[in-house]
Structure formats: C-alpha cells, structure tokens
Amino acid sequence: MVNLEINSDIISDVKLAIFDKDGTLMDLYHYWSQMVSLRVELARKELGFSAEQKEEIMYAMGVNLQNRKLRDSGPVGLKKREIVMQAMIDSLDKLGFNDTHNLCFDIFKEADRISQNCLGEMIKPVNGMHQLISLLHKKGCGIAVATTDKTERAKLALRFLGISDKVSFVVGEDMVQNYKPYPDMINLVLERLSIDKNNAVMVGDAITDVEMGLNAGVKAAIGVCSGLASKEALMEKTRYVAEDISHIKIA
Image 1 (tube, one colour):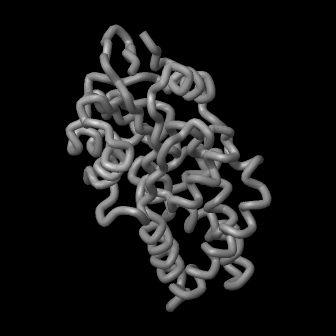
Image 2 (cartoon, helix red, strand yellow; image 1 turned 60 degrees about the vertical axis):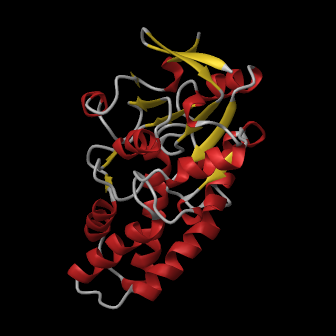
C-alpha cells in the first residue's frame, strides 16, 4: 500500500494503480502514426491511391501529420479497433473505393503481423514510466493495465516496454462488453485481483480514462497530459492532473 502525491494532493492507501497504455505508459503519436501509416500503405498498394489521399485517410483514422499529433476525437488511440477500421472503410468509400470491409480486415491483420518484427522501434516509453512502475512494484503496490487495444497486442507492447513482469493483469477491449468510459474494465481488474475500489486509482491521458475511473468509483481518477487531452479538459473532470506520470510521486 502506498500514498501518491499529485502536485500538492495526497491520495492515501493505494493498493492498486490501473494505467491506460497509449499516451500514459507509451508515446501515443510515435506508435500510432507508424501503425496507421503501415495500414494505409498496405491499402495503397492494393488500391493505388495517391500520397495525398493516404494522408487524408490517415487523418480520418485519427493521425494529423501536419501537427504530428493524434486527433483528440480519435478514433485511433481512443476507440476500439473496429471503429478505427470503419473510419478507414468510410474514408476509402468517399474516395470511390467501395466494399472494402474484407480488404481492410485483412490489412489490419497483416499490419499486426508485420509490426511484430519492428515493435522495438515503434514503442517508446513516456518520460518517467520505468521509474514510477519500478517504484510502485518495489513498494508492493499492484499494477494493472486497461486499454482499448486488443489484450494480446497490449501484452506484447508491455513486453517491449520491459514491464510485463511488474503488471499483474491486463484487460483489453476484447475482454469486456462495454469499453471506456464504461466501468467494465476496471470492475474486471478489481474482481480478478480482489482489490476494493477504495484502494485503487485509475491513471490515463484521455477524458474517457478519467471518466471510466469516476464511473467505477475508484479512490481517484488521475489525468496525465502526455497524450490526447489538454490539462484544462482533464481538470474539468478531476482535481488530480499531472503533466505526465513522472510527476506522480510516492509520498
């Protein structure tokens, strides 16, 4: 059990810290810009659209190449895989490429296969991630991950981040009926690890992460500004907001 310090606030008696993955533990744009580019490039080889149209499709999927950020409305990095794929299908349809569902489904699977060989280059930890996770683990605080990614893909990412041995449980969107901001993921984590919600905190970079924590009734929902949401937007939802997880201290 640990006490966490966020700015000048103390959150006491924490037995479990539940982290979002993308934007919280690992660099959001670094990973997803490459992953979306790979998916769209595979489609480009099949369909023959232009480089300008590739950028347009990537934008529809949530990647803004102009400002090197993900769109705060997603869908990539924020919503589940099927919604990201549908954004690609809809964008292709607007360009005159119809009935591409099966093609996009196969492309997403092929991108998964290809990316496994270069995840070490695609996955970059956020500032202070290793220090906080290591210290929480050393102090006996449980660690879990709740992500809109597929569970097995999330586990693979944690392995490349080098923290798999410190994470007790991983839940992806494929393990629950309702994903963020519904409380299903947190409820499943708490049930599997036998932790009371009053001894757990949720840490995430998106508004939906914070809302999930609030909806689950955990002791604190902590927002970090290293990913999708601004500090101002996060502070509208929770008093606990840090620049990134390196600013979460163990008191």
